[in-house]
Length: 211
Image 1 (tube, rainbow, N blue to C red):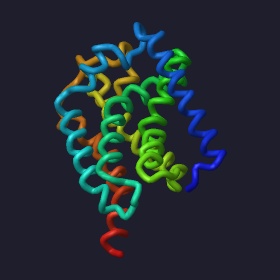
Image 2 (cartoon, one colour; image 1 turned 60 degrees about the vertical axis):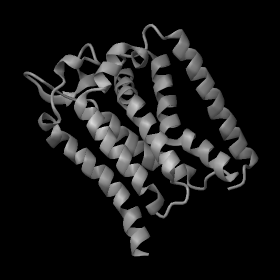
Image 3 (cartoon, rainbow, N blue to C red; image 1 turned 90 degrees about the vertical axis):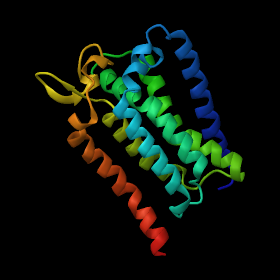
Image 4 (tube, helix red, strand yellow; image 1 turned 60 degrees about the horizontal axis):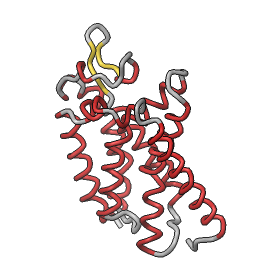
């Protein structure tokens, strides 16, 4: 799609939104969980890294075979990485903000991180690669956001004694790595999320190879 005045305004608006988010991140760096060592310790556990590697490699390898010309090795790779790094924090932060337990500035940063990972980075990449705004920008927001939410929920799974498997952001002191266990102990809860992701991608592959 041509870069019409409407798309130029949209591009400018979310570029400004991202700049504001960066300024807020710098200002809130002492209290922002995303920038704290405990978040990265929470994120870089064995089962999360393994499932991320499987998901990212699968998405990247499949990208050229989906029949979608805007999906290639590059955007599949960086969107997977951004999702892994930010989705557990963004989803948890927005849950807490909805309950009045997180700052609105942190919720704003989380929304920007979500949109950057699921949509805006993809839009800008296609614009730079092809010279036009992707016609798929709107449906991509919906589909990629579902995948982003699913990833944020799955990588927040924890087993806490007395409560069973829960989302980490539902416990005080989140993110708390002391409740981390192996994937075998959360797999039955992660499996429905993985099936959902597979079901969303499968039609693209069936359409490509079937056509």
